[in-house]
Amino acid sequence: MQRIIHMSTNPGDLVLDSFAGSGTTGAVAHKMGRRWIMVELGEHCHTHIIPRLQKVIDGEDKGGVTESTGWQGGGGFRYYRLAPSLIVNDRWGNPVINMEYNAAMLAEALAKLEGFSYAPSETRWWRHGHSSERDFIYVTTQNLSADQLQALSEEVGADQSLLICCSAFRGVTAAQSGERWPNLTLKKIPKMVLARCEWEHDDYSLNVANLPFAASEPEPRYASTREKTRRDTRTPDLFGNGGEDAS
Image (cartoon, rainbow, N blue to C red; front, side, top):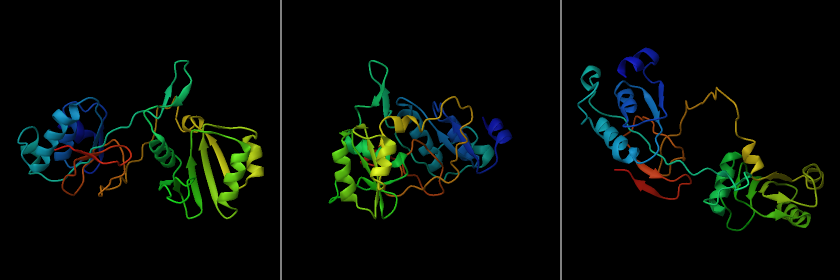
């Protein structure tokens, strides 16, 4: 593993192991001054990977490439859980919203997908998030009528805009809605989610050069990366609602 990483990367590069196993790739890459991302299903993260990497960071792992790299400890990592799939197929094979998502989880997921900051308003029921001071998002599983859309448009006002993510809308087409309510944009769930998926690609050009650093409530991603600070091994769920202590 040391030879492979040495031949194919430089210090500071990212090393990806999508089948982490016992965490050997991350441990070796960490000691060799590389950043890393590992992905694993099952309980391997808790039973093998996290304990092993904690020893690496604490300088207590004396095996492997420790001596040849002069490793004495340092760095850190973050650990996140992957949420269940947002879209699943029903028994007829039609894409539907996963029943594991409640209203708040769905609203936050779609807000993130559309580039909005999730911030539900306490006074405006249709404000689930914002992209600016005047641009908002509203997520609902309802089938909205033309009368409901008219009422929404009036409440939003001409000086603001609202993206509405709904299961369906009736009494008007998408083109007609744009002409009738210029302050509203309508998108259907799950069609809007499926449109973001990339099919039949063999190159995804993943840009992870500037991952956000962990704060008190880190941005949710399923990844473990090396940092210059000491470890933060808390395990938040996808939407930041608490978490586990992985130690």
